[in-house]
Length: 330
Image (tube, rainbow, N blue to C red; front, side, top):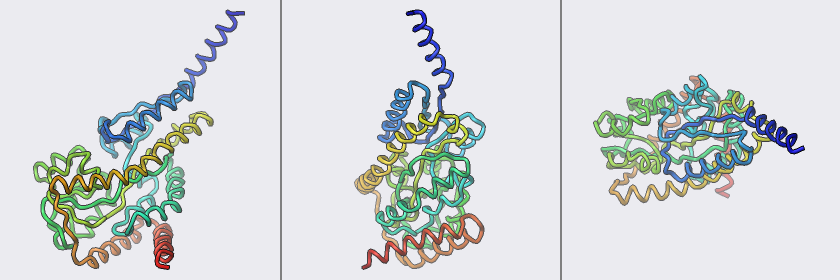
């Protein structure tokens, strides 16, 4: 009898091992960040609760390259997923960049109102495009940090501004402001600032601090240019091989983590902004705001006309903003 029990247990263990899979996920974020600790703790919990059937191996700090490289490695099966900036995923669902349209959001209250009504549409669109994504995570409002003060639209034309390599939409938006964008991968931005290849970046405060870019700029334009967000995106085919119950558990746990990080990042950006000021970054107030907004509107029109984003989602987005502003004015 004991022999039968032993053989049965051995068989169950073997079956569990056969169905086990390790999902390889990469990110540019360094390992010491708070959200990375939460992510690692959560995937460990997934491994335990699925009895080892689902395991994640995380590659941090750009060890697998920038977002573009991560996506390329996902395509050939070297990786299964990545925590990447939304802008890098436009080929899977071009309309996800609706949140990135320049100078559209005026407050976090507007962000929350719109996202509550549109996040599900973005996640569904990515799914149709073959990418299984998790809860969308706020990176924050991107501000222009530069070596020279920028107050007007004319000032910005003098900059050598960084744009993420492999993000043509971001490049086109910069061009609409008269800037010649310089595409670089994330690891190349710091040496680019050090050597003068670029002299401006547009990122949320906590990103500038985490990547030490703030040490090579002197000014920040007090104008939230675009809203930036990211997400854990997994190859849909690799996720489809996961057992239904394991997939539900995995998505539940990881969505919970990224929902928490989504909220925490807002507070972290507030702290990072104070830290930038404390370290001597000079805050510049924009002038001729109407000119900035006029160019932003024109760039959105051009993006729609070129087919870079659908008119339908832009209309839906702008209607939500109108509804929010109308209700707030009452």
